[in-house]
Length: 447
Image 1: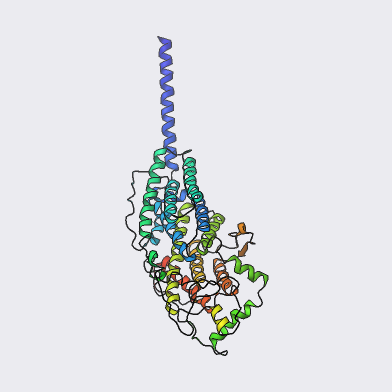
Image 2: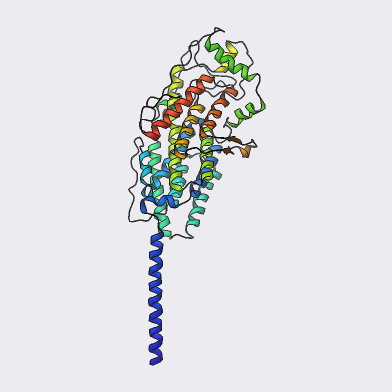
């Protein structure tokens, strides 16, 4: 009996010690958890990085979608990512969430301790499936495989119930965002349109002579309320065929540049052509991904950057399309052939099938660069490796503004835009980004 009693007493002591240690460990783990409203910042951006890579693949492989239309894929994926982690975002992120008409978002269950990488995973898988319904069988399988692989990784450290609840919340967010996206007007952007005719007005351009692309894109609903207020540029130069006129000299610059392109200027034009490639919105998504990697940005700031750069690009293009189809300005190739008499002249890259003024690429680049500067500050030296996979040499810049300015200048070297169209569009894009990131409709004049 004595022996049994001693054994029982020893067993009880060990049990109490184990229980005590378990409690200490639980308290210790609890203390290490980040504050609830800042929890997203405790995670790396690895899950978002993988989905950025997937979306770039989907953009590159998609067919039948106008280049500028990929701004929608960019922004709605970004909004879905951000909204999927809202329960754990710090207060600063809420100042940017001024979505224009977004309803139906799920209500967070504050009794659930969400695992935010799983929220992102569910949201990004769902929104990309919805935004790319015509993706190839291989690309659709890749979306499913990535979602499954990430969830499997999460289960190494997290219980199944937590992953399931988090993924369900992310998918519910994606459904609401996609339903909102479907009502933005893009389905009517390509409705029949008869362009006006007359001196100095746009007409379809050689060699394809395609119909005007998405003439009603300007009617799309903006993603952020008030984003395009006070962003329209002044009228372009007055049309003239007089060789002494400013208009003629503006076009002559395009022609003269085309006759003496340097190796670097041709490389620049090709690097920023973007189609074939990851598209122009996709090029800036790639730049964002590279910035996040360079700065080792945490998940909270990365999802904000995804959504805000996407919103800036998307809404800048809506503003740009208002300008394009308001002025319907003639493209360089038409003027150079028909007025200047160089009937066999061709631009270095193909001329897009929409009016000249203002430049779409410049407006979206100006917007993206301004948003990135606001969100990340001065990035310092950044080498863009977007087109390494095509064998293009990477290009290095010392600021976001420098990236945008080169993207714009590339269109002059490409032979598809006049210099004033580039400058006007850069300013236009910057104004849109300022509206989105400051919430104000009026800005200081561009220096």
